[in-house]
Image (cartoon, rainbow, N blue to C red; front, side, top):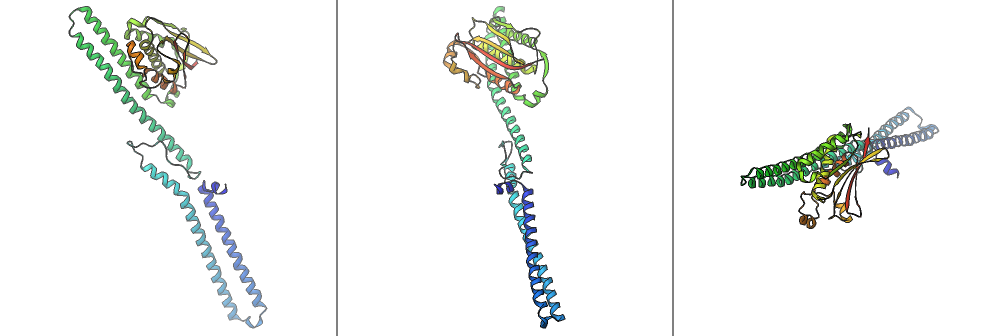
Length: 363
């Protein structure tokens, strides 16, 4: 216990070294004085040696002994101090060696802090926090690049196919339909890009500092109109029951991205014959946004997988002809973490999926 207490602080080690040095000095001084006093007393009672020459020799011996004792004690103190400080700084050298190996190609999430003195540990912990943030930022950028390339490739292939087929049509009605489908595909691609950008750029600390009051119903209406442009044939089944007077304290851009992905997920994977319900649910000191839609292909065992990237119940969805690549609810979960919101899923007995985002603070 005492050894660990001393080893955690460079200041304690130096203090212990000085105490040891002073103690050795006092002990050596006591030994020398005792020897001198003993010899002085012995010689004082020896009348035959009590002449001037003998006294001078005794004084010289005293000087030599004292000087040698002081030099020895100082040397011992210096040696103990040097060894103690070097041992204390050895963990710092290990951390410095690990820091030299950190690069963009080989990012590190932390440096070894074991054995660092207490005076240096706060600096090491701060450096580790910065390294952790940097590694997470790089990971978000890599993930964003991968997801964006994956999504854009699919959307661009759809737009290209629509354009190639549209070139073969000569009737006005057919061309209008292909233009509508192309516009819907472009709107979907825009939504994907905006959602992924929101996740990639969303920094939790910066977002929490920039929260602002806004009217939730206005943002919800905007996203419903956008859904109608992208999927006109199915968007009419969206039923919104959010009061106009609802104001919340959050990020309107991220709130819109959350709702956009919830609606897109419901339109792509829900039953096209059943309504999509948007409700605003009061909670103690907060409020929740809930989107419900029929999900006959889902089972309770699927709920933990809904926020996994690119997860789909392939056999059922392939048979149903549903679209999407499984990024919508992953985006929602990521944005909820940034905004300190809770995301929950509920599948009732009628196979209606309820997605609830709770924790919104009313104004």
